[in-house]
Length: 109
Length: 118
Image (cartoon, rainbow over all chains, first blue to last red):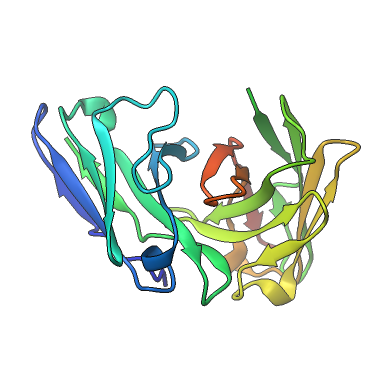
């Protein structure tokens, strides 16, 4: 089981906003950068957010990330049907000496 | 643009060794960390481990006793070996690149399904 906990699912209407939480501890989120990934059905995950709140080139500003203490949050505004996917947080865990992913959240629009 | 492509058998017998290779194009394996990540059908992502171009490795503690990752910088390839496989190792296996500073996984292969079955 993962050391990073996410809600199993969130949903909202088109055009609305959702937030996805990622809860960890001082050995992971508390002392390391968090990244977020979008996995559309049948495809490989794609990097959405790195360094807690930075968007790689080509990622729309509808996606945002933040971190506070041992938790991180992904926000998606102006929801589109194309945003229906699974979303995962990820970070390094110093106690485990491994990269860890969150449990994943399914977003339904 | 960096591209990664996994290759290897799609079917492995129980107790045997799973072997996959990832070919990197558009970038050099002489920098960055090169990783393997897997996803059992219908489940979440599990980081298997990574290798740096120098050969240093880090493995998931839960798989460490069975995993070997190696790199061939001359061929721009890196490989995964997972020994003593069981049905629980059935998954889509992704090769990927991870950043040196903050470990973000910025490039992914398309993934290859490996089924463990007799």
